View 1: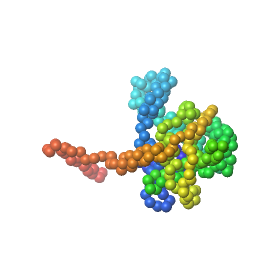
View 2 (view 1 turned 30 degrees about the vertical axis):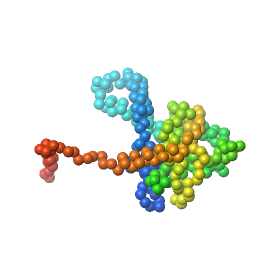
View 3 (view 1 turned 45 degrees about the vertical axis):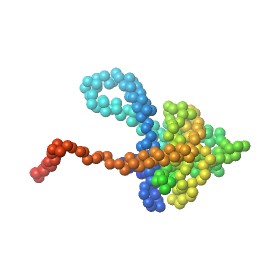
View 4 (view 1 turned 90 degrees about the horizontal axis):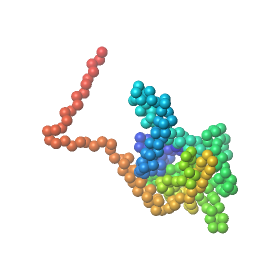
Length: 280
C-alpha cells in the first residue's frame, strides 16, 4: 500500500493526520479492512497456496517433517503471507509507475511492473487521455465531519456521456497476477463511494479545495496482458453502507482488548507474587 503524505500506520491500522489540526482521520482502506469480512475468499486462497507449496516442495520437505517439524510449520504457515506481501508490493510499484506516467516523471526500470504499465499506456491511448484530461492523481480527500480520509488514484475526464460529453471519473487502480481483468470485489464500491462523497481535496501544498462533483466511478484493473475499466455503482446508497462500516470501525478501535473477569465469592485467584531479583 502506498504511503500518502499525511498517512501513518498505527496499531489500529492507517490513519491520516489533518494538516489543519484536529483529530486524526481513519483511512478508507482501514475501515474496509476492519469491517469487511474477507475470510470467505482469503481462507480458501491461503489453503490453496499452502497445499501447492507442499506439493511442489515435498521431496525436500519429507526429511524435515521428522527432524525439523516446528521450523517447517512456521515456514509453511508463512507461505500465503509472503505471497500477499509480494502482491501488495507489486501493486504499490504499479501505482507509482502510473502516477509517474501521468506526471511525466522518470520511471524506474522494473521488469515486473513493465507489462502492467504497458496496459495502463494502452488504456490512456484508447481513450485519448491527455494532460488536459487529468484532473488529479494520487490526491488525498478528507471528510472531517465523518472523520475519515483517503487517497484517490485518479480523477480524469472521459468522453462517456451522451454524444461523447466528457464526464469526470474517479478511478481506483487494481493490479493482480491471477484475477480476471473484469473481476471486482463488492467493497470496491464502498471504497469509491467514500472517496467520491468526501468534502475536501487536499492539494500537495496542503491548501484545500472542495471535492469536485464526480460523474462516474470505476475500477481500472491492470493485468500483465490485459486491462479493463469496470464502472461501479458508488452512489449515495453505497456511501450509507460505508458509513455503517465506519461506525463499526470506530467502535472496534475504541473498544478495550481486555475486560476484568468476574469470579464467584471465595474463588478469586490469588494475587501474583512479584519476584524481586537481588543485585549480584
